[in-house]
Length: 406
Image 1 (cartoon, rainbow, N blue to C red):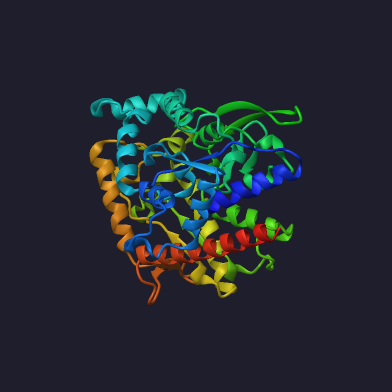
Image 2 (cartoon, rainbow, N blue to C red; image 1 turned 120 degrees about the vertical axis):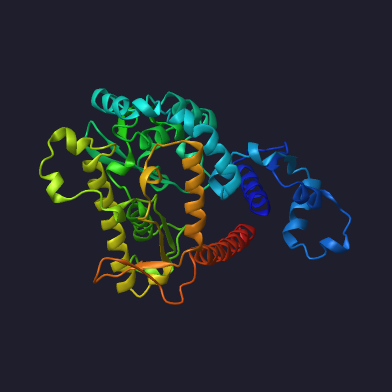
């Protein structure tokens, strides 16, 4: 709340500099009743004596009529989507509720035949429910309105080129400031599963551009390298939001790369069988798509291999955390089996993955090996979270100091 209040005060001061008076209190929504009560309550209790100066700063602005606070339930706090980790229970309930409607299942006795016909004649799913859900959740929100920077890879099927929607590029390429709903629908349009997505966007200068998008995984099944590249470009361009460090100062980067799991350990393909495949078998074989599996797995593994080499070469391997598993078998490795049983089993896999030791790619063998004294994935995530939280507090403190000086 203190950070947002500081931003409001600064914006009002900026408007006043341009001769524009803002006489109404700015509305500030918060999902914590305790924070709102402490900020508004002028009585100091024993239990709140440890509250930092931030509390007094907010209370002062409330009393001055600069801001007016309101409570909003967490489930309605849209900003949380971009600023907070989704609770496992809430995420599970949401996914469990909507998955069967996003991926409607055919009757088991006819499933294989129905799925084959769908894949050969069009996308497996029409995507209508998914599109409706995305548009309902995101509304008219555009890329520039997100509370944190986003980098979303897609692929333009008409131009046969990767297309990256990046918050960092909006200043030079305002035409990319599209609706988040269109960006999300486009990057989730997985070939053979969902239809490609078309939309047009007009920027503030009146320019119009058409977009013909499919899943970003076609261009970057592991988007980690794209995120690193975007940050590196900002450092090279001396963006003031980034520390003045060298572009290759990987010791100043913290990278968490989360995989979606695979079944490569199952070794379900071999050259003897593949040597007899034609076009149809490469596209669809016993419920799987060998061509897509080969492409997607090799794409994500090469990115991870590159990152491991670079971070280790620059002695920053502890700043790169890759969490993934290649032990998913059967329905667990499927993209779209949305039965209650399978979704429940996936939750168990995720919980176990947190307890597993941190692994790192052995550059000599190409295999993942536990890191000595690396702890568990859960402990590593907590360590990263603390580092990020400490850095954010430091930057917020400097930001308030600089604005106060101005």
